[in-house]
Structures are given as structure tokens and as C-alpha cells.
Length: 183
Image (cartoon, rainbow, N blue to C red; front, side):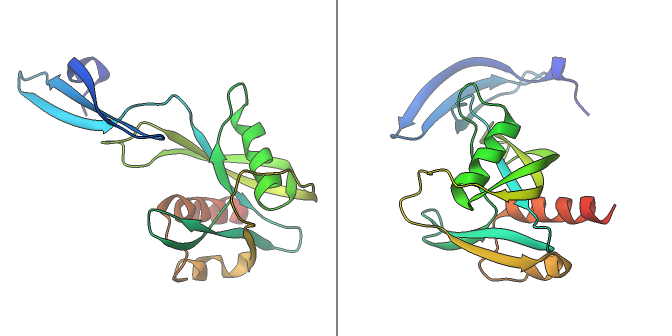
């Protein structure tokens, strides 16, 4: 395994494309063996995100069905969102629960910090298990109401086969949450 002090040297960076939400950056790199390559990545924003697996006292997972522009369909997944400036990951997790499903959590257990496609993205997402839920609604930024879906925890592994449950981060969070609940 290469140590960080052997990682490639960034010779130059340049923003090569930009939209309202994204900037694509071109990197000229020199590897420790002298080989030079050009890579592209999403320019790091510095903002990270959270995803929360809420579990009710009755033993249900709470999921949301919402439109995903990337797949152009409605996807089933867990509440998630960006961490606001000045907000901790735990505070963001509780806020997202309140905005997306109308519940807060008395107990938020960090499961793992994950990165999606690290060759192209640097954003990190902290996955949480939420328990001790209580009703509390905050206004969110979704353009339409989200559909709340209850799924029995004891049928959690069957959720993997559900056609609409395909997001890798939600699947990862589900497996980690089921493991945590079994311990």
C-alpha cells in the first residue's frame, strides 16, 4: 500500500467545465515513478453529507421515495442531505430526519464515513443509525412532498431485492444498520 508521502504530485489544476451545481477540474499529476497523467474530478466543495437509517420502536425502517434526476425515476432510500455550514454531522442528521420524514432522534449512532467514487469525487457522507424517534417536522427544501415508506427491520435483507431500492449508499447503510442492530 502506497503511503501518502508517495502520492502523486499535483502539477496544475484548471476548472474545465462548470454548471450551477458542479465544477469539473482537470489535474496534471506526476506519480512517484515519474509518469505524468491528466485526471478529471469534481472540484471539492468542502461540504459533506449525511444519510440516516431511522428505526421506529415498533421495528420499522423509515424510508423515503423521491425523484432522482440522475436515474429519471423515483428511488427508495433513506433520508439524506448536505451538512450546513457551522453544523455538525449529528445535527445535520437530525435536521434531515425532521425535514424529510417528520421525526427527530434521541439516539444517533455513527455507522461509517463513506466516499462515492473516490477517483472522481471527494465528498464524504457519514451514515447514521437513528433510534428513539419522536415526532417533529421541519420545512425541507424538496420540491414535492416525499412519500414515507415503512419496512419491517426483520425483513431488511429483502429490501435489497426491491426494484426501487438501488442507491449504493442506502444499501451500504442498510447492511451496517442491520449489523449494528444485531449486535
